[in-house]
Image (cartoon, rainbow, N blue to C red; front, side, top):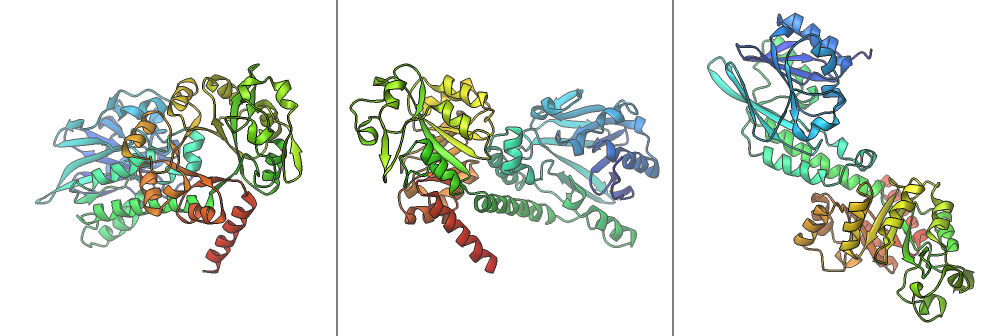
Length: 486
């Protein structure tokens, strides 16, 4: 059993008590007709909770409600063990119930109220940290004062990192929900900030002040607004840091500045230059094979009339593609994924033809690239179909310059598309901040020169396709060196 840092149970004010540990908080409200408990923590926290009950002289049999702020293990996993000791009714926000490893006695929806004895707890749905995070508000009478207590039940922003969201397949839109929840909560008047974790309201330090006979440090009407403003600032810093530290350089059709694009030669060149990702385009041949090719016609790349769909794979393999004295043949999607799928790379796969969504999704699944690939297109209907067929896949919408409106953003969100791919002219600081605030990952396209490249990186995008990944990687290294000098 993991040992935590103990915080001896104590009365915070009125009929509100803290039990638990520094790492995992739990609170008790003594309503006069039984106890309302908020969070229990994980199994490791249960001994601290039990010690707290004993210290305060409360009985677990008197717990009538256990309200869970959200489903994460460090708030909820102690429930099964606690249930052996109490008949409390366990409740959680409706969207979070499906994530739990155990059943609950009921779900809470936005605005629901739990009344017991002299206390009514108002539950607000404040998603972001999780989809069903709940915030709790209730009055406490302390002496002659009636004070409003508030807990933001999903105050952690680290679970909104790209790594966490990608690991659990959570849409980036949860970031927008987090910002919206902060804005909503700022409208609530709160006299006493109750910490969802002990460091949110400096529980341990506050207890020491009370023991020394000082004024109650938890009564501070300004603390709520300061806390929420700090959370917003931390979330924006996380977004900004990730856009620099995890900026995704995608070799556009491979290193297509130097090699014939969309060939194995170009892809290997991009990887050799250090690009952490590859972008490519998919079309279907006359005999139904998925191949990698960009243009609508063969004239520029192969010097042949017609389009990909006019030829069989065997015929297309007979047409060489040349650039800078280098020559290669058109590859199939399977050849590409077989060669690069096992590498530590990200992939952007653009749908160029209609009705190839099913086969592309099957290929991505076949090579186990569900978490490494983003499927992109200029055609919203292609992406909508892909989302229906393979909802687990990340999708990116390629937008023409000047065409990104609030209506477009709403359509993308409704279609499960959380990667926005604007053209270079639209990558401006105010735009990237707005799109990030909506929860989109911003990945640019249309970089044609080094000025474009610098604009995209300097203005806060999360990544870009680029024909010359070596130059962009060198620029990023140069900027990182300058920042280290500062």
